Amino acid sequence: MALVLVITLFACESNYQNVKKLNLSDGAPVAEGKNINFKYTDSGKLITNLLADKLLDYSNLEFPYKEFPKGIEVHFWGEDGKKNTVTADYAIQYDKTALVDLRKNVVVITADSVVLKATQLYWDQKNKWVFTDKPYQIKFKDGSYNDGAVGFDSSEDFTTFLSRKNQGVQLVDKTKTEDVK
Image 1 (tube, rainbow, N blue to C red):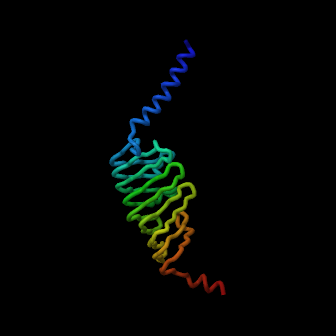
Image 2: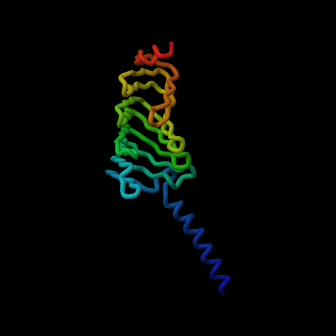
Image 3: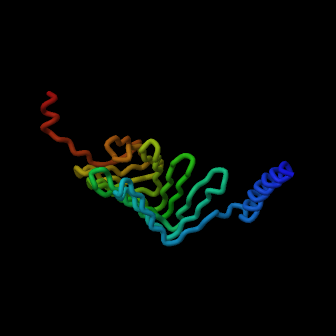
């Protein structure tokens, strides 16, 4: 009798998982959210605040992701308490790779006045790296700027910035170049 009960329990669990899958239409999200105001804290300190009109959660798929079809606004606070802001008209966050794909009217404003505008921007959260193959404009805190035609790779704090093809103005401190002579 105990053996039959155990087999029945395992069979029910398997059937329950199958029924859950059948209840979801092909490609339908497992959850939908509206007027999202997600706050992430660490030790009582606000680290991230994500705002979005709509969230579609596809964590039920083999390659899970979250889609923000009406855009996002994300505020990040560094250890120093300074705020950085990212906005985009559309975004996807891939759960397995920790890659965020931001599209349409992407704007990044850092606490130290770097302003980046792009049509698409990828953010590799694991490696703390941002990049694009699309045109972009960036203005650095010293007033120098790049209008890039092809794309760039950069650390997320823009201290390492590798442009592939651009036009722009780079400001050079003459006192530092004269010291090299």
